Length: 104
Image (cartoon, rainbow, N blue to C red; front, side):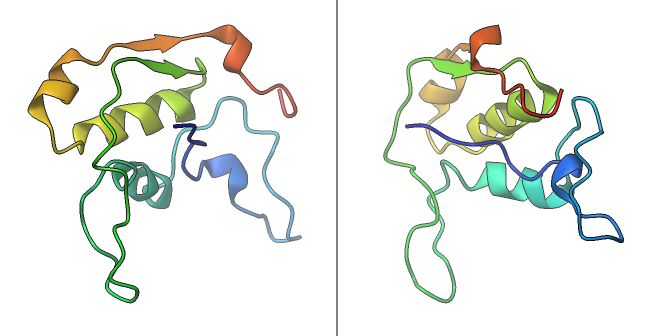
């Protein structure tokens, strides 16, 4: 399962309609936190009645970029995983080679 980070402050557009890519290593917005929390959720979307997350997926190891927004996304996602065993036993490994470089 490959996931992109939730919305970060650099993704919010300014008054000219441009993203704020100048922010170094931004954290997640409240919307980004909610996006992360549904990755492994077992809830249903009210409109489509479809599952909103992958509660059936039980990772054994998480590889993430060392950027703050990706660490936050993985942490919030795992906090909401329905399996206590997965939450307790799934290590997270941050690797520089996974880091994006387009706005740093």
